[in-house]
Image 1: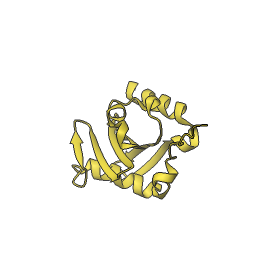
Image 2: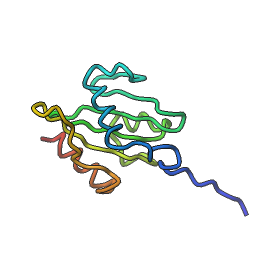
Image 3: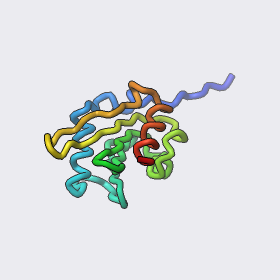
Length: 127
């Protein structure tokens, strides 16, 4: 009988260390020109967290940002916003309040589920 190796969960590759403060830190870095980003694109920045985990920050409408942790092998899908095609991801939707200068968590995929996270992101983009 052939053994198959199950792919690691995001917690096994380090995403459990990412609290809301860390997630907001990536979004904040993005809004200030992404000086610590590994790669910067139009409307997004990629942060290489480890060999097994990347963070992608994407600007959405109305001071809203998507922060997504995923496996580096899935960058093309993540950059295109095709989260449903990723093997693993955890995502956060954050909004920056310009008056209070604070971040608010709108949704986290770990709490609302992958499908609802994707739906909410699409709804924000659609306006």
